Image: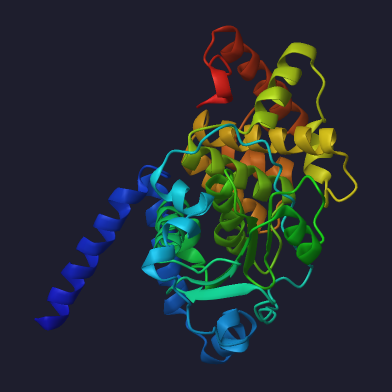
Length: 368
């Protein structure tokens, strides 16, 4: 009798979780993922799982122990409120125009590495989901709440991907100044945030763009593990990250608005074959990086919202299983999507039609 009650409770809990997830993906996606997980546990291999758990151990199990969070006296609270706390309660202000640099993706990304200890001048804090290093300022409860809220949203919005590969604890490094961020991460000057898949670490500068850039970088750490032990295609990873950033902030980055207009009004763009073939953007000048990010985002947006989300999940699964892009497209979407060039032509045609009808890029600020 007790087992029956537990079973009914488990089914009810699954349905409740699924109800929140339906805003992102269809019922078919969730059920397929649940079925896959059931099959995985049904074929449980203790020795194999032991080896996998060693490779995928969360960094906090191997790395340094966080020091006790340091809270500011109440009298200093107002002086310590930065852009991060303000963003916790206010809608994003202004137009985000920073390009997030590509995530660090070594070939052996499944072999996790230790977290770095907190550098001089960084204060620390801890939640169930994150270890937090913050430059100069204490890690306040509001900072923790913002990050945990992002965690909850991403877990739901990226189901069924997070259902199959639940992210471990993540180190978040919050920088007070752009220069200190660049000195520590060695990212390019146009970067506002970055992530490292091998150490499950996110780096971001605290400023107006904190919230969308944090969603962007954490998306890498929540979405990309689905493809392990292989790497997800760079364009798909970055495109999904920008898409989730826009979804969270309800505002397109300024560079995306400019580059989409350039594509639609002049026809100048990076061919999809070349865009998808890129393995790194480290040598891209800023204008080309903006175009690349814009196309990757616009294509993911198109595949998610113009086509079926069940088909998008199947497309990702085909890529995970090693299918080349053209074959994954055909298996997920059917004809006429048997070539990347065909996808580009149909995407551009549909985008131009929506632009002429005033359905996209018609408002100030590029709001969705």
